[in-house]
Image (cartoon, rainbow, N blue to C red; front, side):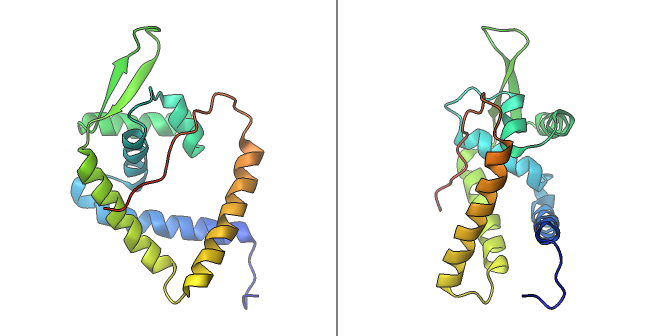
Amino acid sequence: MPQHYCPIGFYFRSISNSIDKRFNQQLKSLGLTKSQLDVLFILSKNKDKEIIQRDIENYFHISNPTVTGILNRLEQKGYIVREQSKKDKRIHHIKCMFDETELRKLFTETADDMETLLTKGFSEEEKIELAALLERVMNNVVMDEKEDKNDKNLTCTFERV
């Protein structure tokens, strides 16, 4: 047990904030933020699906105004386009315009750097155990939230370059 015990949520929030800060510093030269990179990556990995804003909101568990802001900035930078649905004029499909190879390379490099930092000093067994425990925590939270039946099960895995 740690010397100064804090609620588990405090650790997750602190780690998340630090990860976001570090990613944002690495992405600054491209004019991107971690949130924007995450959205681009998901769009790229799911290019065979017709992704709409609500899919992104549901996948990342973030609000409509937050996603609107992210998408507006990505569109201004030319990284995405919104195409009006042929079936329903109220719906806009979101397409990633960022070069997929470059995006995968960028995401892989930043993710690898972060994973190295997060698991510094861990044995391979500890890394595997940590991943399993975190997956269980994530599943607890996601299953609790998973009441939206319109979830398209967007893909988040990626291949190493």
